Image 1 (cartoon, rainbow, N blue to C red):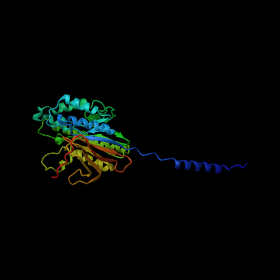
Image 2 (cartoon, rainbow, N blue to C red):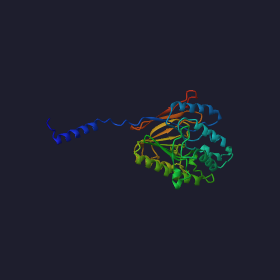
Image 3 (cartoon, rainbow, N blue to C red):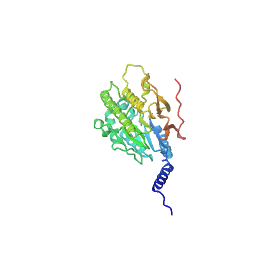
Image 4 (cartoon, one colour):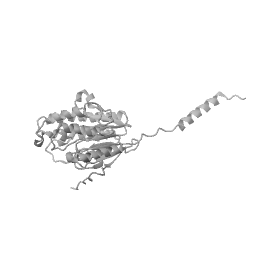
Amino acid sequence: MRRVPPLLVLLFCFGSSLFAAEAKPAAPPAPRFSFVAMGCMPYGRENYAAYERLLLEINRHHPAFTVHCGDTKGGSEPPTEEFLIQVKAWFDSLEQPAVYTPGDNEWTDVIRENNGRQDPLVWLGKIRRLYFAEERSMGKTPLPLVTQRRDPAFAKFVENARWSRDGVVFATVHVVGSNNNCQPEIAGAIDEFRERDRANAAWIKAVFAEARTTQAPAVALFFQAEPFASLHKAPGRESGFTLFLATLEAEAKAFEKPVLLVHADEHRYRLERGMRFRKDGELLANVTRLETFGAGDIHAVLVTVDPASPQVFLAGPLLVPENALPVLPRKK
C-alpha cells in the first residue's frame, strides 16, 4: 500500500472541516410572538361585563403578555380600596403576565370635588403598595421585572418597570394625563411632578442604554398620557411633557431602530408611523405611536412582534365580538 504524504492528509482534513463548517445550517430566527395592550377601562360598573369578556378574549389569543396603560376607572368615580383590589383580581385572571402602569384617574384626579377632594399622594401610595410590592408582573404566570427601585436616586418609583423577550426591550413609564400632574393650583402637585419627571427621564435613558448594550432589535414603551397634543396647545401654561418628549426624541433618534410608543388617554384607536417630538422638530421615521381603545369602547390592541423583521412591530385592533363596536372619531 502506498503511503499518503502528510501534507495531502492535512489538506484533506482542512478541506473537510471547512466544508462541514459551511454546511452547518444557520440558526433559525427568533419566533414571532404577540402582546396585548389596553387602557382607560373598564370605566364604570356598566362596563364590567364587557371588560370581563375582553379578558376572556385576551386569554383565548394566548399573548406573551398584556399591558394595561392606566386609568382603570373614570375620573369622576370616587376611588375605593375595594375597587383597587378588584382591578388586581381582573389582572390576575389573565393566563399570561399582566403589566400595569398607573393613570391620572387612579390618583391625581381624586382631588376633584366629586371625588371627595382626597389626597392624590395617599392614593398613589396605595397603588404602589398593592400593585408594585414585588419585582414581578401580575397574572397567573408572573413575569420577572427590573424596576427603578434598584436606582437609589429614584427608589420610590417602583412602578417604572422593564423586561425583554427575544431581545426586544419593553418598559413602562409613569406619565399621566391631567398635564402629568404639572398643576400649580394643587398643593404639592408641582413638587411631585418635578421629581417623577426627573425619574422618568432617567428611566428612559436606562431603558435605551439596556437596549444598546444587548443590541436589541427594538424598544417598546407603555404609558397612560397622550403627550403629543401638548405640542399644539396655545402657550401660557407649562407643559408636563416637555422633558419626557425631549428625552424620548434624543434616545429614539440615537437608537435608530424601531421604537413603539403605546398609550391610552383619548379613548380612540390610532396607529401612526413617524412622529415629531417638537412642533417644528424632525420627523423620526423609526418611531410608531399606538393608542388603545377606552371608555365605552371595551376592546384592545394586538401587536405581533417579529424580532427578525426590519419593522419588528405589526399592530391592529383586538375586537371582542360580543361588545359594542368602537365609535370612530369624527373629523375636526
